[in-house]
Amino acid sequence: MRILLINFRDSKDCSSGFKVLFPNGLLYVAAALEKTGHNVSIIDFLYEEEFSSLDEELLRADAVGVSFSGNINHKFNSVLKHIKTLNPNLPCITGGVAATELPGFFLNMGFDFVVLGEAEETAVKLLAKLKEGNFDEVENIAFTKEGKITINKIKPPVEDLDSLPFPARHLINMASYDELIITVSRGQCPKECTFCFRRQNYYSGNRLRVRSFVNISDEMSEIYKYYPDKYIWITDDNFTMLSNEWFKSFVAELKKKHFSGKWICFSRVDSIDYEKLSMMKDAGCVSLLFGVESGSQRILDFYKKGITIKQIKNAFRMCKDLGLKTHAFFIVGSPGETKKDLKLSLKLFWQIKPDSYEVSTLLPMPGTPLYDYCFENKLLKEEIADRERAYIFYLENIKPGYFKLLVKLAHLTEEDLYNFKNEMSRIFMQLSKKTEGNVTISNLV
View (cartoon, one colour):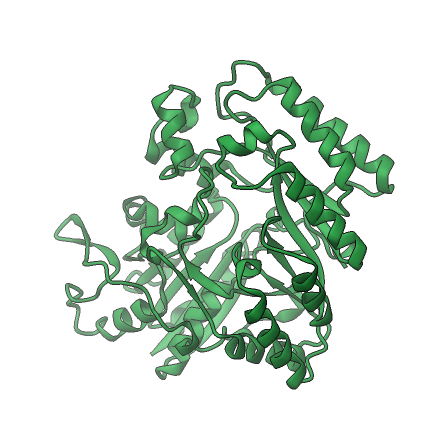
C-alpha cells in the first residue's frame, strides 16, 4: 500500500535553535511500515504552507497518517477538511499522547482511526485490515462504528525495544533540523514527580523498558555516519538513571564503533556522579539539561521530586568542573508558593549559574496527582476545571513561551510571577551576558 505520513508543525512553535518538534515517533511508524512492505512517504508540513502542496501525494495515497507538533489551531482543522474534501474515502489516522487521551475529540474532528499508545505494531495491523473493513480484532485503536465511538482491547506495548527498526530518517529533509532525537527507553518512570504526565500514561506499561547499549550505540553510529554535523539529543528523562556499569559498556561500545559525534541529554540531579559524567563526556556528551524546578526544598517536596537543594548544587558544580554545559528548567506557580520561595529560586539560580535556562508556569495535566490535588482543593482556573476541557485548552493554546497562571494561588499574583521571570532574566544577563531562551545549539554546545 502507498502510505502518506504528514507531520504538521507551526513555525511559530519552532523558534528555538533546537527544534524539539523532530517527528521521531512518526519516523518509527514509517520504519515499521517500510519493514512490512509498504511504500511510505513523509511530508513535513508547515501550517503556513498552501494546502494544495499536499494534493498530489494525497490523491496517490491508500491511507494517510497525521502527526502534529505544537498546539492545534484552526489551520489544523482546515487541513483535515481539505484532505477529506479532496479524497473523501481516504482513511485518515492519527495518534500520539493527545489523541490517546482524547480519542473522541479527534474522531469527532474527522479522523477515521485513533491509534492508542505506541503505534508501530498497531499501525501495521490496522493497515492490513483496511481492505477487509473489519477492525474489531485490531488492538489499541479507537474508531466510530454504527455512529458510536468504539475503543478496542488494549494490549501491552512492545517488550523488546531492540526489535524495532531505527526511525526512517531518510524519508525527511534532515536539513530542516539541527538535532536528531534518540529515545533510549519507554514506559513508566520509577520516580514519583506529581506534575509529570509521562509517568501516568498506562498505554506505555507500568515499568521502564530499556534498549540495549549495543542497539543504542548502533543507532548513534548510524546517525554519525550519515549526518556527522548533527547533534544527537537523548530525550529520555531516565537515561542517566542507568547504572555506571551500563554506562561503561555503552561507552566501550561507542568507542569500538569509532563514534565521534556530539550529544546532549536530560538528567536528574541525583542520578549522576563524577565517574558517570566523565564517561559521558568521554563518549561525546557536551551538555545536560536538569529539571531544577525550584530553589525551595518545601516546593520540591510538594512535587515529590525526590531531590535536595544540595544535590542540585552538586550536579551543576560537577558539570562545570568537567566542562559540560548545563540547562536548568524552573517552574513557578505551585499551590502554596510564596515570595520567599521565589527568592530562594532566584538565589539558587545565581548559585548554579546555568549556561541556559527556561522558566514556565505550572501546568497541571489531567491524570497526574498534581491535577487531582488542584481539582480536589478547587484550585484550577475555569479553563482547565475539568479533565476534557483541560486537554482541549492545552491543545489549542499552549505553545513555547506560554506564561499564564492556571492555578489559583493564595500568596502570589500573576504579576509576581512575571516579576520573577524578569528578575531571573536580569540575573542571567549579569552572569553570562547571554539572552534568555529555550534550549538552543549556541548555548548548549
